[in-house]
Image (cartoon, rainbow, N blue to C red):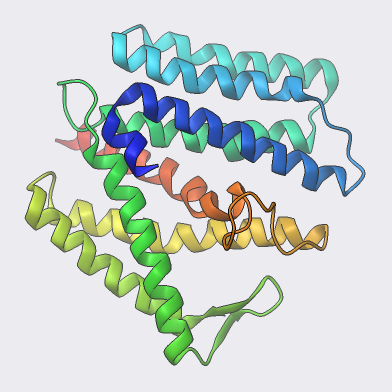
Length: 247
């Protein structure tokens, strides 16, 4: 993922399309265990949205193009009924991944810049790593024994503190935005990253499976690896847009 961001918008878009489709496959397999019928046509609006994010920002097209994917999704929902599969495919997977992709054009007016999306995933990695280490070494108080027995309050606080430190280091090294903006991003990473993890854990527990898939040895599936990002990236995108508006 980091390499695809550094190589530019084409590889970044291609990687996120792959993540989206593989994540959809895992999501649909989980929902089929609940006896729900699945139609791969539900993937069309999300795929189109990711492609449009690249096209609109890279070639400076009209923002009105972004109305097309939700319109297609809404028409399909009205004709075939609102389904859990279709809603999660678009709202939980496509919109967050598209927000993450759009961060590549949020740094300035000079076209695609790798720094913001790369910083977000690095902060997620740092938060997850130190939350795990702190929880393993010092964890005593369980957060959610039913959803995620391994999560502790000590781990959560440890991950957040190190994330704030990492946000400060990022600000010092880059000089981009303000310190408070990076503290805000770090807080979103810690709080919403946990929310994304617990949401996916709840989804897996409804069908009584440990992992969403087995594609990534030691990690589980695509959804297991990207669950935090799916909650974090839309919030970071909104925060950055708000910062731009109040400047």
